[in-house]
Image 1 (cartoon, rainbow, N blue to C red):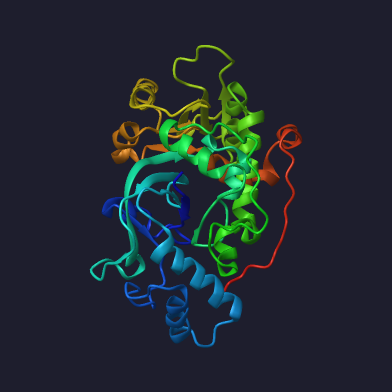
Image 2 (cartoon, one colour; image 1 turned 180 degrees about the horizontal axis):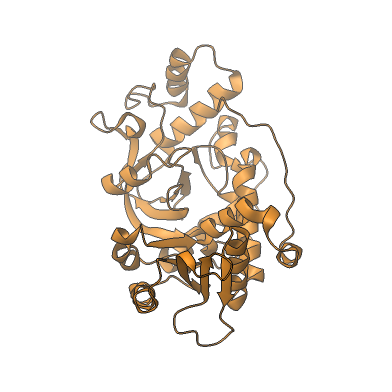
Length: 351
């Protein structure tokens, strides 16, 4: 079986769209020169030492391991995952070439492998929590292996669903894919977990499990009320395309008036977008909110591209952000169903 790799696209997703447009993926390391002539890990390490002579031993080791993975270990046929910050979705594809240095690319995307992207809009809600945690390292490049990651990512690539963990064959003691211990960071990314992302994914999973169906509309109502709207939520059953009516003022009739449609199931297609736009016109609403927990199809996303000033999309990650933004003001009943605790930790500003 081919290997699976994760390559992150920058802290703010600055390489998201460029990687998709150019059919490639790679790390930053703008100061690192072309590594094509580096045919051993030691030669990569020498380049890193030349560029970063004062870096700590751990930083040199981790950087070398990641660059060596990109330079030599990632091979055509391998599965590649790119968590995207801009859309909060996952892009999955198949590597089609080994490492190359592309001097004409933007500086942050010159060390690359070519990728044929197969799925570019997989919602994080489609991935079970244990696998999300495995994908949640702070490293730029790593090989997810725990929780049957490779098999499950292959299933996600082919079918868009996560089959969950199964019993794995144990590895022989000391086995690390044929590489030396210098690759331990890349091959054991769980030891450098992104705890903020892991916590967000845990909340996302909990909401997906406990606020399915009509209960998701109840959660969205609580969020909007915490943001100062007066809301009327439709009862369960046929709703004519309107789950929540929201507005400002004592009666909820002042602008902006918002019609909300909530979909807690699979990806939403363009007919749902058209339906929301239709009821907005019929009722004279100022704005529309489409809550698409399972994400949008490409056609739906394209159909709403020019409506950004009138229609807003909340996917699973956006709902989580809205909960965190308003949690202190959300009703006690909802807080009891979704108990959260604020945790402070040091931020590694130098990373």
